[in-house]
Length: 93
Image (tube, rainbow, N blue to C red; front, side, top):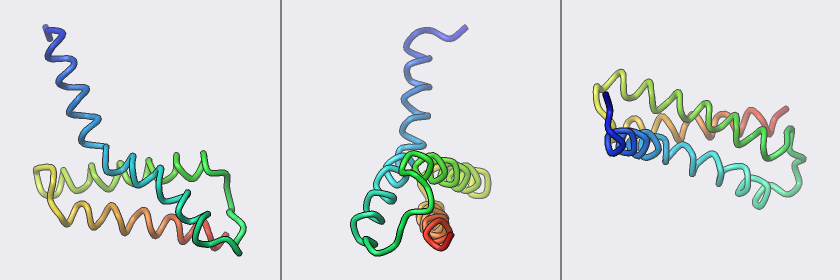
């Protein structure tokens, strides 16, 4: 049985694992609206954040499965490329 500290530590690790994807998902649509003023957004900011969070989370999980550990720079590169590709795809629609 897990103790309270074990549960809190597990939640802390999960939040820290997904933190890069969360920050990127929050900042990318806002920066896109700021810098690409002439293009109309295909979706609302909330749906863009949700989509980026899903794509980024999958990229981090795949990196964890491929490399066997967290924190590899190639995983973060894949996260950025996946999020940028998703934003490009959303802005083309």
